[in-house]
Length: 411
Ligand SMILES: [Zn+2]
Image (cartoon, rainbow, N blue to C red; front, side):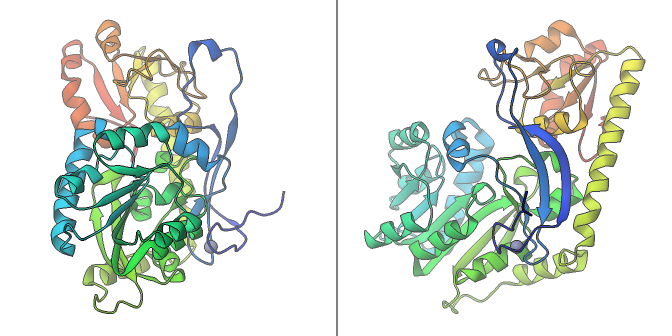
């Protein structure tokens, strides 16, 4: 097999960031009737490019598969809706958007964000490849095109006179296989005075929080500010501001503009974050290379905790069936020998089995029926909320544990 190449700069990839072994696609829950069949496993090996510092996976899964199979409706989460509404109020004010402006969102999902622009009378256009999700957006009155966004589709929009004062891309940049075409497309649809804002998980948070379970086949790229600045600069854009957000365990929201628009200087926040990443060592390879040992140690600690509990005769259940749980359980080799079952509120997942590990997924009421002694919270980023929900389990002496940033029994 030829050496893989960087998806941005084409340099050969020879530095491993972390190798999580072979893993099935993290959202491919197994129904009962397929329990006797095999599942495809793909390498979950992450590289860092020496040239451009982009942390990345090789692509094994088509973009069509990712964007059209996962009918994830953002509107189901009230926290996301609040995040979206707050953003719209802030950006409308900051950019002075109004009835004469044009907003375009890439991977606009079910219109959960654009609906707030529509309510304010600001023209908004969504671009969303999943037809069923796009239909839900249209039901909310959000104009939505069903297509993949890339440079050719951007050029078509521009030719049709649809240039944007604001381009939004939230939690899409990591999932774009052809980064250059996507970013070139943003440059093509921005007005000369336009702004693009993009949100994506921040590599520094992934490393410091040991969030290796957020690595999936569907997430091709993991960005530092240093890497993303370089990518935007290559397409004639300057990142002039940045915010650090709480979402997804710690994300960045970058603000980009055409490089030629010098009326908006690069903010202190950009300079400070760039300096911090440099100080922490994100321009050198050592910090990337050290990550893998940290991940291995997390696996050893989690297995120690679970095996210790089993030796004491305790019953262990999981809580949640998120994609990140599947990366974790497959990497650690945890099956029903350690975790009897898990529960999830999403009815689509109930009655199915986790990919690879084949741990059964039940409705949350199963916890009350089975009364496990230890509950491992897989969506650790929501642990406070989940511990509150599970408070009745304390009545039979159940304890709660999280796997990340390290395996810990909660007080
Ligand atoms: Zn590169």
